[in-house]
Length: 191
Length: 191
Image 1: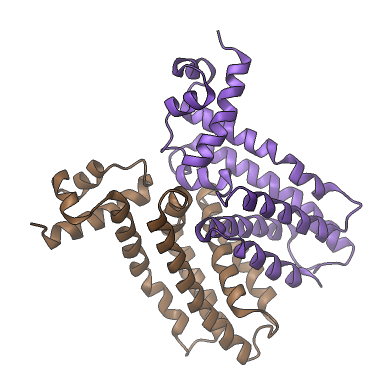
Image 2: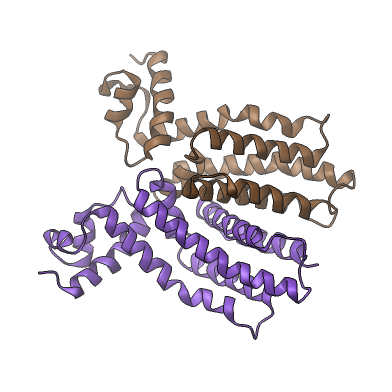
């Protein structure tokens, strides 16, 4: 019988192991060991390693919810909400030794091999972009950014550019890419 | 004795296999089979799979040389050189079923596990950024883009943002991210 706390231990340990090692470099045995549970119990909780990967991704996205709260904080001017949001993510990735974004890492490794995972990352990125699009529309209404920009396209561009900065920071093992993102994007957006 | 054509066959087959499968999902056996050579000959030519990965990366970067030629074509206005360069890369990635940039894919998978590979990708990205920086300086001298922008930081931002667009296109399996990159970046840069 599947025990809920075993499931939870597997997801928590798996999030850490998949982030540290990558998906293919990390076996079910490694994950079960890190969780302190028997390997056999893994398949009581997850139909496949792929399905497990999607659950881990879900957990990673949910854990980032606090970093997205600022996007809906209407007490803060809209472009500043976006800037604070990306500053918060950059600080978290820096504190995590530039291991990168688990969604971006898994997508780079698996997008062509797991339709399940690819579709979920696509949905998550679309939801993330919509939250930023709302801020851009608010900024446009307030006359703080260029009204002629397509808010949805710009929001999507921003998260893609930020994911690219995360990857570069992972390669360079420093935060230069985050500083360049911030220094380039925000002055250009201000009207 | 190491035969040069075997080395060449391994690199050509490895480039295709590593791009298709990823590094950890693809064994030396798979690569040797794809090259049509005995597995044992692999280690006559490469000290390790990691060293082989760096050679494959090198080949990928060199094969992209033609796409960078436009960056030094002074018959073309400088910002248009940059735009044509990225258009060419986007078209190539689209024609390749959005499997992404091999450098970005390998970096996402291995940057935290192979210092050799990480350092080489860092050097390549820095060289790529310098080629674009030259175009931005030319555009600034010609008064075609904002003189106040830091050309080196902007060039680096552009390649990072484009790598992010490549990753998003790999996830979405369409070219929307490339269109958004183009539609956002170039109008904002024009003075």
